[in-house]
Length: 115
Ligand SMILES: [Zn+2]
Image: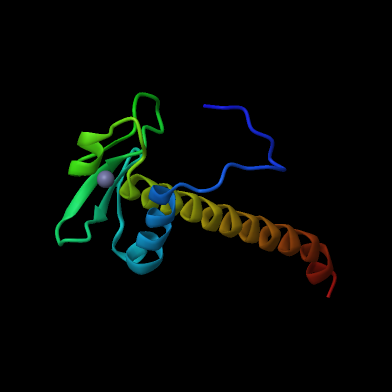
């Protein structure tokens, strides 16, 4: 991992762009298997199993591209990482909405009791 400034991020690689394209086109077919593992659709039919190694270890994908070049993230790994980031952002938003709703109910309770 190189230490790059956020002001001058590295340009996205072709694999990352292909992962983004895969997520946009078929992200609804990505299925979480738990513990950072996902089923990601393949372009030629079928699907691959991706492990984002969220508990440590090495990221992996069952596709031939990753087998040939395990040092790079394949597009399935990139698509699964985008899927996970979006799912986590959605969960945080929902948690924040629940917390806000609970807080506003609590602050209205004394008022409701007085009526
Ligand atoms: Zn792959």
